[in-house]
Length: 399
Picture 1 (cartoon, rainbow, N blue to C red):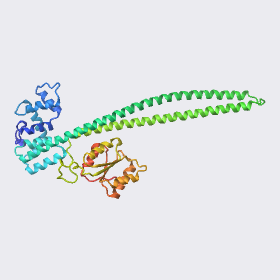
Picture 2: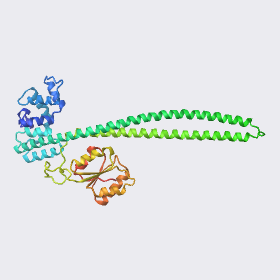
Picture 3: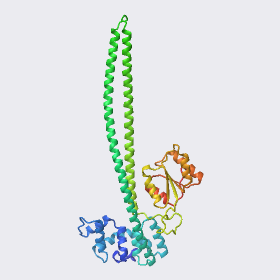
Picture 4: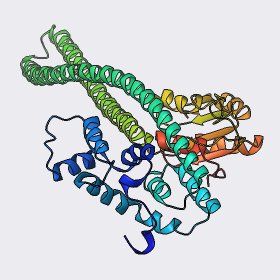
C-alpha cells in the first residue's frame, strides 16, 4: 500500500498477541460470519466463538480469509492511520489515552500496533490496558445479566398483577352492564307506579275517608323507589370511577415496565463500548487496589425519577464506591426531610422529566442555600444518571 498508510503492517504481520484483541474489538459477530461465508465456509450451526477461532487460525500468513479481514479492519482504521503517521511518541500516547477514556479503542488500536514507528513502551501499555479492559467489561456484563434476571422477575410479577387487574376490570364491566339493566327495569317500574298513582288520584273521591291515607302511602312508596334509584345510580357512577382508575393504573404500569426493560437493554448494549470512569478526586488512584476509586464515598442524592428504578440508580452509585440517597419528588409533608438530605449530600441529581415542578424549585433553592452542587437532568434514564454521576462538567441550573 502506498501514500499515507504505507508504513503500516497488514493484519497477519502484526505481533501475534495483538491479533485477537484487534479482531475482537473491530469485527462484530456478524462480520466474522460474513467473512467466512464469502470465503466459502459453511457456517450453519457454528457458534460465535467458533467463527472467531476459524478466523484467528488464518491470521498467521496471507490468505483469502486474512486478506478479507485485513481489508475490513484497515478500512475502519484508515482515518487513524493517516492521523498518527509521522506523530511523535508523546502525541501518539496522548491520542491513545484520550480515546481510551471514551472507549473508542478498536480501529485506533490497530493503527497504533501496526505502525512501524510505534514506541515499544506504548505497545506494552496498549496491550495491558486493553487486556484489563476486557476483564472489567466481562465483570460488568455478568453484573448486568444478574440485574436483568432480577428485572425479569419484577416484570413477571407486574404481568401477573396486570392479568389480575384485567380480570377485575372485566368483572366491573359485567357488573356495570347488570346495574344498567337493573336501573332500566327500576325506571320502567317507577313509570308504571307513577301511572298507577295518577289513576288512583283520579278514582279517589273527596268523600272517601281513606283516600288521603292511601295517597300518602302511594307517595311514600314512590319516594322510596326514587331514593333507591338514586342510590343505584350513585353506585354505578362509583363503579365507573373505579374502572377508569384501574385503566389508568394499568397503562402507567405498562409504560413503566417498558421503560425499565428498554433501560436495562440500552445499558447492557452500552457497557461493551464504555471505558471505566476516572477517579473523581485523584487521577493517579490505583484502581485495582481502591474499591471506591470512582466516587470515593461521595453521597449522591437523587430527587424524582422512576421509583421502580430506584435500585438500579442505587447500584450505579454504590458499585462505584459512593453513597446513595433518594426521594420520589412528592412534596406533601416532605420539606424538612429533603432539606436534611440536601445538607449532607456531595451532589444532588434532579431529572425534570419525572418530577414535580415544586420539587425542582424546592431542591434548587436548598442547594443554593447550603452550597450543594446540583445537576438538572433532562432524562431519568440509567445512562443519563450514570453520565451525571461520573461527569466532571459544571452543575446545571433550573430557570
